[in-house]
Each structure stands twice: as C-alpha cells, then as structure tokens.
Length: 184
Image (cartoon, rainbow, N blue to C red; front, side, top):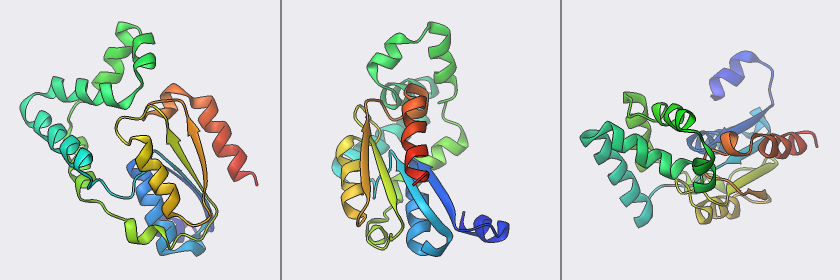
C-alpha cells in the first residue's frame, strides 16, 4: 500500500481501511505517517489472539476444509446482523452467501488474520484517526474495536448499529462518518 502511495506521488493521502484493511492501514500509518493525512479504520483489530478469536479462526478454517457451504453460512451468520439477514430476500441472501464461499483467497485471509498482531505499532500512529466500531459485529466484536481505538493515541471513535459488513447494512451512515471526518 505504501509503495502505491509513493509511486503515485500524490501523498499524503487519506486512508480508509475495513476489517483486515484497517489493520493494513493502521500499520502503514504507523510505519510512514508522512504518507498519510487522515486515517479511518472500520471493524479493525490489533490482533486475533484472544481465546475467542483463536477459537473462531480455528472453526472457520476447519469449516473451509470440511464443508464449503457450512463455511459460507457460518461467515454470513457472523458478517451481518440478524436484523439485516432477516430482512433479506432468499435471492439476496443466496447472493451474499455465494460471495462468502471459501475461495483460496478467503482461506488465506482467515489464516493471515490468525497470525496478525500490530499491537506494538498502534501507539506509533500520529495522524488524525477515526476508529469505527460496529455494535452488532460478530467477526470483530465491539470490545476489540474499542481496544483498537484505545491503543491509538488521540484517535476518535464512533459506532454504527450494524454487523461487520457496515457497507452493506448502513452505507449512508458509514459514508457520512467517513466524509465528515475527512473533510476536517
């Protein structure tokens, strides 16, 4: 990511990272703050090493090995809030579920998540940062987003009443939070 910003020659840039992208964005801002003007991190986490997180990723990986449909359904159940899922038509639910099948890239992402730890880097972030936690998030429960915020000095915090996939459930609210923060 940093190489793209350097090559484009248009820095510093505003970075918006979602989920694992929030981890990448935070690490990038900690490493080279001169390339980042403002940082927005949604559904991020410092690491996935707590017992709950380790059990979750082990279950996720095992489902990918044993049953692709169970993997997709497990992911769907944890990626969106129950209210959002209940409001989907059968066709829409199948469409979202189809995008959550255990592709090689998705399985590699789950494996990567289980090994990531940027705890030490968070205190090095000096750029204005907004951390967004999702109240009904079951992939990155709210306590992990709050910890993420607490570890970044001077960061701001907001919450959305949504599951992990805030851009599906609350796109207007998410966009407004991001735009308002970046406009300052």
